[in-house]
Length: 302
Image 1 (spheres, rainbow, N blue to C red):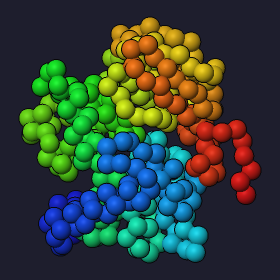
Image 2 (image 1 turned 135 degrees about the vertical axis):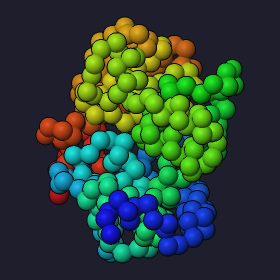
Image 3 (image 1 turned 120 degrees about the vertical axis):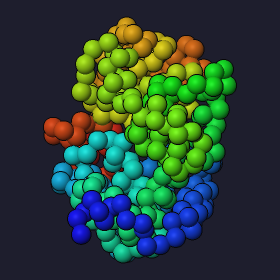
């Protein structure tokens, strides 16, 4: 049987039952870790609170969970930042459900395993609900459609920026996981991509990821890597010289992360302040070490 045929076979387990178990486990994990069911969270902070260390490594894989006396998760810094976040949440799911040690090499293989391995399915659903809680997603949608019922690609981009996951990840979760958008909305929004939205907002082509913030953004922290962009409808003020000078663009204003560190960010009409945490770009000489030190100056963590 080919991998493609296996992928589209009906799973040999009760997906609805396991999805409910994963949802309850993710909700409980949020409570146990001191998060509500609405706010975005940083998965690396969550793992640290859970007593699981996370380390970035320059190995060509997605992630690995090592169930030991001192449990740890290894995440490849060769993958995009938002993918690393989901992978880490997935590996934390294995820890929460007390699965054995695991290693995930490539995304396509992981998808097939998730469809036919109940442990992988549980970890996948746990990750989605932990990072994108139902109440948080519903609130974000309600805020962004209160003046207009039409949900735009930029709305999905902003929500994905808040919850530290990918554009497509949010879209699939809203449609398949939560059933809160229609099939027509899903198909229409799926035509856009983060690359297209970024290039339109910037007014030029860039291969570096971008985060979008506006007055409806709710994240208390944003995680970036050097080279990444923040696009805002408002001009922003930074507490430290970690970003480029303000650049006027079609989407408003753009700022590129230049240096590793932490900066407090304020905006006139945003109505709130948040923190931007910047680590080294993964593609060249990326950060290797404990995730909790990723945005700090070089640390010898052993």
